[in-house]
Image (tube, rainbow, N blue to C red):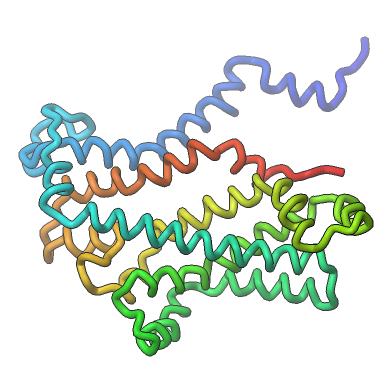
Amino acid sequence: MKKPQPEQQGMDFLQSLPRRWVTVYIPLAIFVFVLLFPFYWMVITAFKSDAELALHTSNPFWVVAPTLHHFKRLLFDTPFNGWMINTVIVSVAATFISLTASVFGAYAIERLRFQGSKQVGLGIFFAYLVPPSILFIPLASIVFQLGLFDTRWALILTYPTFLIPFCTWLLMGYFRSIPYELEECALIDGATRWQILVKIIMPLAVPGLISAGIFAFTLSWNEFIYALTFISSTEVKTVPVGMVTELIEGDVYHWGELMAGALLGSLPVAIVYSFFVEYYVSGMTGAVKE
């Protein structure tokens, strides 16, 4: 009798139903529950009435009488709409600036092959590891001296300090996977470095660019320390800072409005991920092959 191959034995281990439950279904169910339960709790809290939130007499895991009262108060009685506009403007502008600088930096380090390029790339990676809680101290002095304090420009120009190192590091790995033969053929045909970057490298690196853009947009959208330090006026605040500073009054937490704002504030990021999820996965796991 022919013995099964080791690979076949490994697959046979998952064939029986009890083993699949133990090795696949139960761990996956636990992972999904732990991952999605906070979002579920946020949603049901946003639709609960003040009485349900205060009395706790009904089932805490369900909504007895759904209401839109918290959304109405959030949208019409607070500056939430202005916070959302500020967050969109700051996130889009910071992402665009960071991607532009990162493309040039990653292309120069990985494709020009100058002396010391590896050390420069390693330095960029180390710069990404520096926590923002340390950088905001000297940046606060610079922002104040330039007269940018309490303006959107304070965030637009400081967010790239932690976005550019990350995006450059991510794009370096993607540019490295693009065959050098394509660039060499273009140089033989008389193409300039700018033409190669725009017409060859960037079209092939679209998944990597989208991945870096999604990460930069998400980090800008959820950033808290810089927005809390450099912004003081209510009308200029972003969503994360505005909700924490304006919807919490001492020891009074307006949980309905807080959860409604968290739900509405997370929708743009979820929409961006849903539209570009295929490019995002491709940029993180795959690349151009020779």
